[in-house]
Amino acid sequence: MRSVDDAHTAIQATLAPLPAEWVTLDAAHGRVLAEPVVARRTQPPAALSAMDGYAVRAAEAGDGAVLRVAGETAAGDDPGAPLAPQTARRIYTGAALPKGADAVLIQEHASPAGGRDDVDGEGGDDRLGDRLGDGGRDDDGQDGGRIRVDRGVDPGAHVRPRGQDFAAGQPLLAPGTRLGARHIALAAAGQVPWLAVHARPRVALLATGDELVRAGEPLGAHAIVDTVTPALAAQLRAAGAEVVALGIARDREAELAAYAGALARADLALTVGGASVGARDLIRSALGRAGLALDFWTIAMRPGKPLLFGRFASGTPLIGLPGNPVSALVCAQLFVLPAVDRLAGGDGRPPRPVQALAAHDLPAGGARQDYQRAALTTDALGQRWVRPLSPQDSAMLTTLAAADALLVRPAGAPAAATGTAVPVLPLFP
Image 1 (spheres, rainbow, N blue to C red):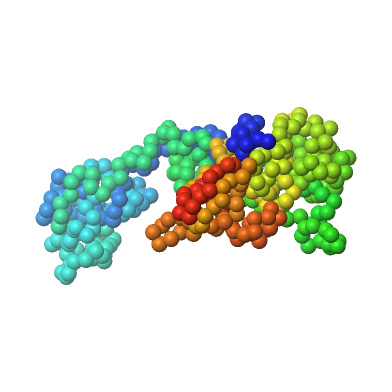
Image 2 (image 1 turned 120 degrees about the horizontal axis):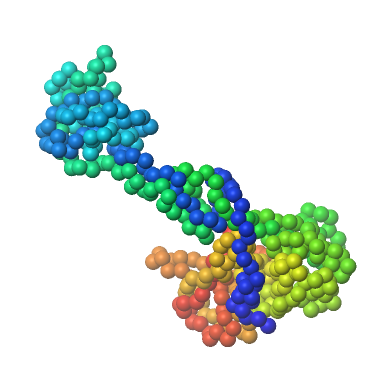
C-alpha cells in the first residue's frame, strides 16, 4: 500500500498546468495567470488631487496668505492653463493639477477673504462649497473670489504624484497568481482588458455499479442512490473544473471498456466504485484492456483504502475513487481537488492541516492513517478544539454532513490525552 504522501506525490508527478487561453476581466475571477500582466499606462497618468480643495503653489500658500480663485478642475477635466502667480484653482478629488501647482490646500483649511465673493458667517467643511461652490466665480461667471489660507501647506501636500501606483511597462501580476477581485482591478487600472489564464480542466466523471440509480429515479427493493457523483460534480465546478458527466456504468467489462475513450479524452478522469478486489470490481481489468497503465490501487488510509491511480496512453490520468460515499469524498479532498488545482495552474499542494486541541482522550492510531470526521469549535480565548463525531462508518453521510473537519490520526500515533494538540484538516465547502 502507498502512504498518503507517496500517493499524492505520484499523482502530482503526472500533472502539468494546462495551456493558456484568453479571457476578459469579468471572466477571470478564480483563474490562474499563465502569462504576466504588464501595465500599458502609468497610474496615475498625471499629478492628481487627493482631496477637494484648491491647487496652489506651496510657497505662496503660507498661513494667512490670500489667493485669488481662478477657475476649477474636476476629475477627468483637462487641467487647462498653468496656474498664475498668487492664484488658486478650485480642484476636486481625482482632478489633474495645473502646471505650476505643487500642493492642494484642502477646503477645510481655507476660508473666504475680502472680495466680490466674500461672505460673512461661521466656517465649516462645506462653507466654501456653498459660497464658492462654482470655483470662486460670481453669478456672472467672472473670476474674482478670494480665499485666505488658514493652515499653510508643504509641497506635495494632498497630491498623488504621476506614477505613484505604477508606471507603463511595469509588471503588475506574475504567472501563477490566482485571480481575485483585487487582481482584476489592478489589471483594469493597467489598461489590460484580456488576461492569459490556464484553461479550465475538463474532468470526466463516471460512476459504476449495477446497484446505483440517480437521485429521484424509481428505486428497486435493493437499489442504492448515487450520492457521490452529484456531490463531486458540484465540488469540481466550484473548484473551476468543467465536468463531463458520463452517468452510471454497469458491472460489465465490455460496458466499462466502452467508456475508456471518453475518459481518455478528458484532462482528468474520475471513476467511482469498482476499484477494490471484489468479483464486480472491474475498473482495473476493463480499463486495463483499454490501455490504462496502473500505478497503484491501494493506500494506507481509512476511509479510502481502495483508491486506484493510472494513466491512459493519451496521457490522461485516472483516479479511481472508492464506492463508499464518505471514502470517495474524503479521497476527493486529499487527491482530486489538488490534481484539479495543478491542472488549472495552481501549485497542487494537498490541504494543509491546522492544529487543534483534542476535546477528549484519543486512542492510539492503527495501521493506516485515519481521517476521522470531526467538529471544530473555538473557545472564548480563540483556541480551537476538535471532537470526533460518531459513528465513523464510511457509509454514514449524516456524520460527514455534520463535520467541518477531518481529525488526522497518523498510523501508529500514540494515544493522545484531552488537550493534546493534534492535526486537523478543515473540510472544503
